[in-house]
Length: 131
Image: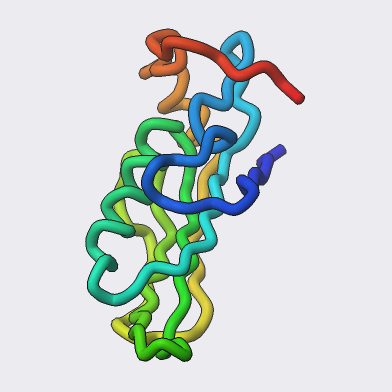
């Protein structure tokens, strides 16, 4: 079964402690990392690049959700929400300043096959124990 993990108060960078290396004895504790963001338009590219990096380093699908509009201080937010594949590829995105829904087909079988062929968890310095 696909497991969903939403780290508390997720921000980029640095990756949230709960969003890194979530593997115990070779068993991944989640397959989809959800990041709720509040990044202004000027930082959109950095936000998306870091979200892709989190998907790659955790060998998990990623869902980045960012706000749109202008806040009370006049700071503009252009969205940039993405669904990201476990290799960092963009599977779905919204247009600039776009609000709406994203949809993509995620394959747990493909993810598990990739994890088995490239067991990156074996190179992690530490494993975070299950809570």
